[in-house]
Length: 196
Image (cartoon, rainbow, N blue to C red; front, side, top):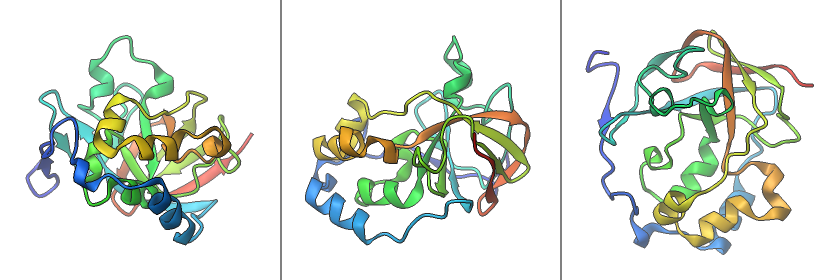
C-alpha cells in the first residue's frame, strides 16, 4: 500500500491507554443519550483498521475484504486457529468516540468503524450486509470487552458495554464474516441486504 493510501499509528498510550481520559458511566450514558439514532438500513464506513504484527495499527483509506484474510495483513489471519465467526470486528463509530474520550479509535483493536445500528434487534446473527463491494454476514459470536479494553478505557466503560440490561444494544460491537470478497473504502455505503 502506498503512503497516500495508509497511515500507521503506534499505540501512543501503550496497552493501558491514558487513564486521565477514562469516562465515567454517567458521562458515557449522557453522551449516548445525546447521539442521534444510527441508521438501520443504510449507513457508511468511517474507519478501517488493520492490526500489524508489531502492535502498530494500519488505517488504510481502502482495502479488499476477503474470505481468506478478512482485512489483508490483519491479526486475525495470524492467530490460528482462525475462527471465521470472529473474522472482522465492527463497532459503531459514534459510540467508540464517546468511549475513547479523545484517545485514538485504533486503541479498540476493531477492524471497521461504521455509522449503522449494530444492535441485536437491527442486525441479528445471519443478517447480510453489503460493505462497498463486499458482502458480509453477522455472526453469533459475542463481541465483549476484555482486560485490554478495561485498561484502555476504564472500568466504567466496561460496565457501559457489558451491562446485562443493555447488552443487546451491542455497544462494544459485533463480528462479521466475509461471504463475498470486494473493495471497501472510507465513505463506502453500508447497506443491509437481508435479515433472518
